[in-house]
Image (cartoon, rainbow, N blue to C red; front, side, top):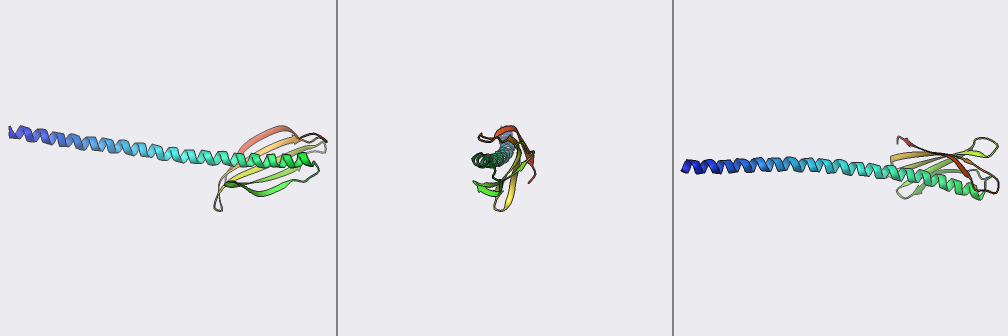
Length: 142
């Protein structure tokens, strides 16, 4: 009788050890999943922020051009939020077509974490707002 009771107690201990091991493996898997998800969420946030910065730069240039079409626009590393944007505008032809390139960069201290580029082609007409003909987004490696 005593031997049977010791056997049952040993079985319960073994089951408890197996249960703790399974729970530990499950917890490690959940931890890994959360870690990857958090990292990806941060990357997506930086990507979106860089795109918004690039688009803000293009919109800034379009506003300057709309105010005075004869203005030569070149904005270099204008700070905004947690990043900066740069914009260059160049004439494509004498008929008023211009190319606007906006670059948005998300920064951490002096390091570029993410960079996005927006290429816009617009038509400038006297007395009218610029007409957007093409708006293209691209990723550029920091």
